[in-house]
Figure 1 (cartoon, rainbow, N blue to C red):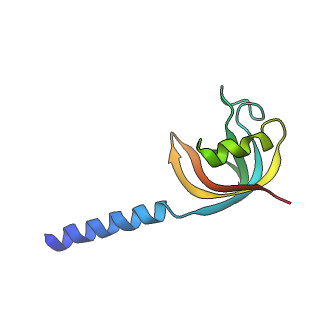
Figure 2 (spheres, rainbow, N blue to C red; figure 1 turned 180 degrees about the horizontal axis):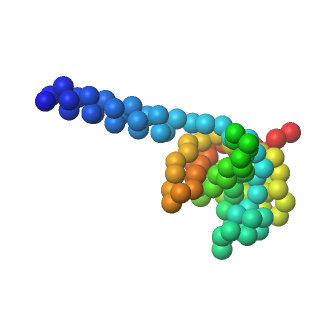
Figure 3 (cartoon, rainbow, N blue to C red; figure 1 turned 90 degrees about the vertical axis):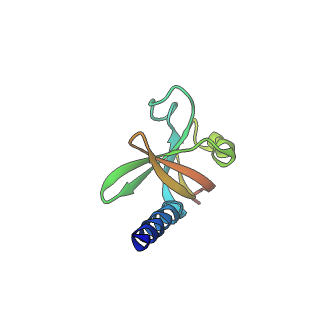
Length: 103
């Protein structure tokens, strides 16, 4: 019984660490409100091509995404962002630790 509990704790801890691993995404950065007309408030999104499909990442509202938003609000640009991704309400949400325009 103890071994089973220890195994479960190990699996859960491993899953939590894997879920918090940072990834880097490159794609078209735009505004969910002004560019995509999907939301009532401005929010940075990145649309990336993955396996031949467009995947939309909604950036969590933090200092990094708020400070960067003016770069993509009125006009879309290619961007690269690094952060952690999780799914919320069927959408991919990226909590960015770094965002920059692709040169």
